[in-house]
Image 1 (cartoon, rainbow, N blue to C red):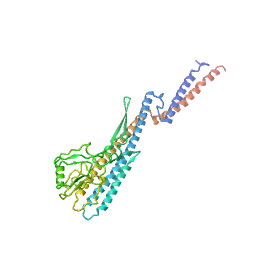
Image 2: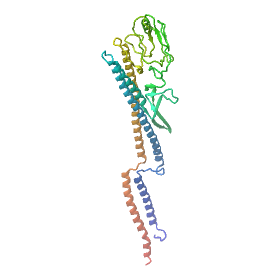
Image 3: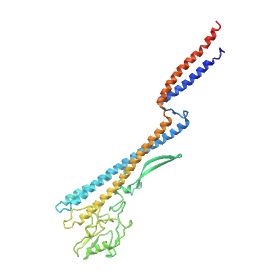
Image 4: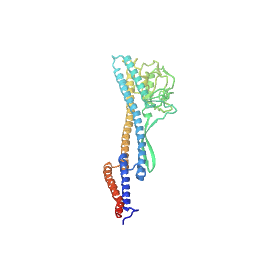
Length: 388
């Protein structure tokens, strides 16, 4: 049956052509954007998951940036610590050379002073974005001993968590402005050294003590060797007025007055088997007046420099460990970002080979649909011929 008013063939051809054009538009959009899920209307579930992962990747990118800043701070402190180690090695070498009887100790002293100045300058200069890791001031109101570096971002069942790496500046600082004198421990304060000795019953306080009696060296030696001396944070401090290391409490002539007016340290050196536990700060090394017949003080300085060198090595080890942690975490975050990007690609990226093939097929379908519509529209001409 042929109808003049209703052309079912043309209607079918037109519907098919419209669907083909819609598919063609969709394929063209995928090719132009590279996405098979560009909006939530394309696939609501995939679009939602991909959007969440993109947001997490943005946070992970911020974590990676924070790790980069933290690595920069640690690198500066690490390089500073290595420089300080080299300076302390130089100091130790100079002190060892000073044991020779034919050297000019005043010149060596000048070189040591320069090295000590360089140590302080290096520590003060090891600052990044206002953060100092080697030279601090723990008395400041905004001082924080633990430096936290953002290290990770996680989302578990919709709950977000941000983790940090913690580096204690108390383990890395070489100088603390709060410390008025001494190097026994971090943050030591100035004050009085209280040491009661059982045998000699001699008490040392902030005032200078003069030994004028005979056998004073033997008495001091007996006291220092046998007394059960206990040092605590409340007792053990340093005389801020001290300028040089202790030169008394060593073997001398009986009856000659000696003065114990120098700095003490909890972990002092053993001066060649004589008085133990006194003196010595790396900031007050003075070898200019040391005589060839009395090198015990010089040996004590060498022992102190060696201890300082070991302490600096521990600082560099701590910083090196932090540096390794940051590098490892940075690599992990980077791999996590890439894994998330692959997941996003799997969900929303278009397969360009497939889309290219589909586009060509749809273009052919479009041409066939137009031809079909043209053929369907010729039916009215056939009806007209019936009346000729």
